[in-house]
Image 1: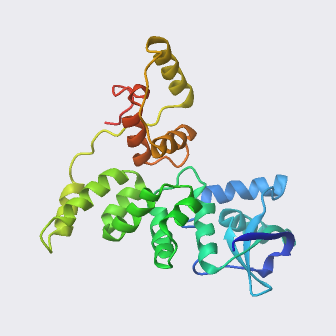
Image 2 (image 1 turned 90 degrees about the vertical axis):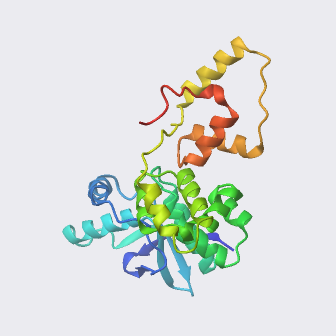
Length: 269
């Protein structure tokens, strides 16, 4: 069972890197440089997260930018950070792999492609879709779509998804077409569809704008009601939070609460 075992001041030389636990993206060197200056000036304000395996084996799970910054500091300031604040966690390898992604996915710029490998791995490790969804604070249908469609994506499709040029909703539409295509034509259909003009995509509204629209609607139509599902409400909260919002959430909220959207102002050309 995944758990925080303790907090400790651990010798940095004892912290190792495990080949299955990564930062999921290349390190941002500008961010590392900024952290070096900040940590020298203010200290390490957030401990690293490490996995204790088999007693005294410690592997880095979360804080890869901070670790890289500290390594840079130690090169230019010998003797600095010989010991370091860590949060020590325990759990089986599958749980630790999931935690590794969860810690990375707390970033605002997380893309759906960051989830592909780990979600499929956990599904193959016999985690139920509901367990995976609960762990990552996602819907079961969102996890199910990754399991179903991610293995079908090509390198070019993943690159566009990762860069934000392609929405997950559009990617699923393309992949659904390939499933209905004659055998051997799948890649051709994907590449043809990827060359089509990008369709307008709705942007999530800021909280204050949304509140204003609801207030105006309440004044003009005080008895208006909405028929929504639990998933609609979940998507609404995720969208209003403004963090890790994917196109599926936006599309669902836009359909369930049309008064929140102004098509003339909330689309990308």
